[in-house]
Image 1: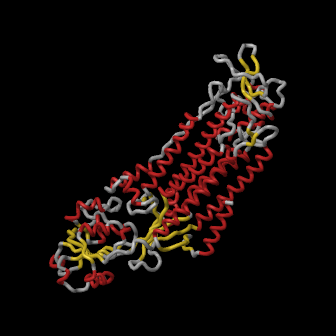
Image 2: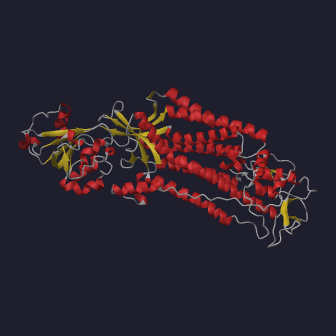
Length: 602
């Protein structure tokens, strides 16, 4: 279903919308509409990816589930395997076809998480403008400004708005404030400039270098990266704001830079801030997603075929039933062993990065301030670009996509570990109930009184919340760190984009929400460990976990108990060994009793 939906949507988008350089445009216009559609589309993507991830993980668990023959081979070499949980340890003992399919499922999941969320992405506009620098007595000189492309600015000065220094800095320091052409009136006189009022101009198409002139002066520290050039940083310089007007000196650190003091600005106004945004799709990424979906679909189909024919022990009930039907005498008399692991990792790097970046920019870090900026919203100073900026446009595009989606890959790996640990905990909990009352085994293919196993190997009261929170977390992460394109247009806003820059945006409130839910999600496991206690003192079943040897050791019922695997069973003492140790096993016997406190039970 997911494969068909992806193929249909990709074919429809590619046929209906024109593409350029592998990028198609679904919608251009109102930024609020783009943001809303982008958020909902990514929610849908993450729901589909979570469903696919859950199915893929279930198939990976089936593939590493050993057959009885493989378990026997491992026991013969004194090695136990994991039953009913996704275990990498089992890969050494299963068939090479299963290993290849397991790898294809895992790798396809990894690459899907790296590309899927960026197959549909938003763009924000930036507008070309020119900053012209003049002497303070420019009104006394009516001569044409030497640069033909800026003389139109001189003619438009009577209609321009006067801005004081702090107002001018606030409008032009952020390229996404959409300022139009501006005249910076300086303290220099025309007599000191050879009788000319015009000093120079600065025009930059490449975003985010458009606001470079605001901060690039020796007195301010030549903040050429523009990363720390913010309104808050510049407020202390507003009363003595120095600028460089000789454009060639901006990029040559050895060049002589003549600075002047800005007195005030004359601005042509601002571009509308609520238009010019776009929602786009990447043809190569959509094609990649479809190919990966096809690989995953083929792998899932092969898993179903393999599971039907090989009859692996995919849940602990399968192993108990198999060992009750045909005991493994190599494990008779062994003490059941426990197998457990705990995975607890909280990834806070992105949150600390965002807070540090905002501190560097002197931006507020309170929750109300972060919320005001918006969930998944793009801000000029919340874009990561320098680490991926370089090389060809395609290389920058791909690097930005991989960086933006790397947390998705990390979380999918954490989900795999989380699912395995939760499965082990619930398996141990279910095993403990066999010491209280007789229960039928839960197996993959039920016979007799046996019960069917849970879909996705977890009870629905655990599996459904796990899938829902996983989808929500993937969505939060997609809105916390995301791929975005900044397209620069002519000052009138018309025509095609002059240049497009690939960037990775981050939303501080999105990171906070993802971090909070992830923390709660992780701490649910130890909480369940405390709440899901074994039912009373009578539940004395040793922790077998998912160990095949431990399960096998508990499956040596009396010889006359021939059909125990088909009937409701109970765990307890079924006899005594010659050395006085009590023999404990799953059995249908009526007189089974709990082990004696302090006695050795094997």
